Image (cartoon, rainbow, N blue to C red; front, side, top):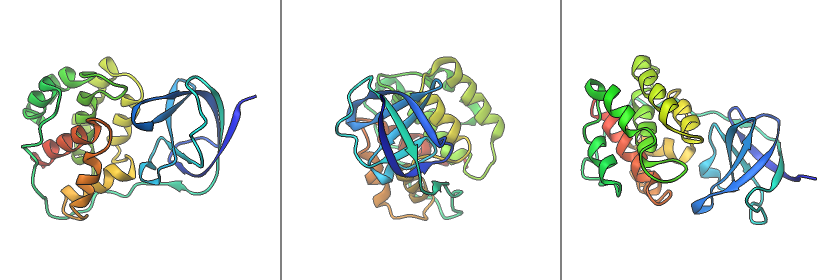
Length: 223
């Protein structure tokens, strides 16, 4: 029988009942695959988001273990980006993956088609740093519902080269949605949240947070 985990909050789009195989990843991230779609299971409320279920206890789960998730409580919906002033563009934020770092610094609407295909799927990990850069870029470029054509170009590139869950996170970013931790950092870049939120995101994963910030900063340069 699958183990049952009861959540006290659910991300947008998480069905009322999920059942699938859990896969443990680095930095404590636990992803549930259900109907070939990934959902993040976490006990960290700062990672609440569109593909997240916050659960009481993850410590006993093993890789590949069957699990049923009973989702309860209110669903979380992210607010649109504020119309505050912009902060710095963090052009000096270097990424560990040299090619991702180089491509990110060239990222902009004029070159988006070429660079999106080169960044998508680039780098190690479940969400490669190239995908994280593109996701961050989408979060600032699409925060107010604009740039749909640009978003389509990026998502087509990710669809061809990226795997899950990076692709799902990119799709949600095109709607202005992400984890609470990420959105707070985005809002800080807009000047509507404490700069501490940027530092908090920078510590997410070995490079995920830094890549997201770099992508968001690249998007802000073109707004």
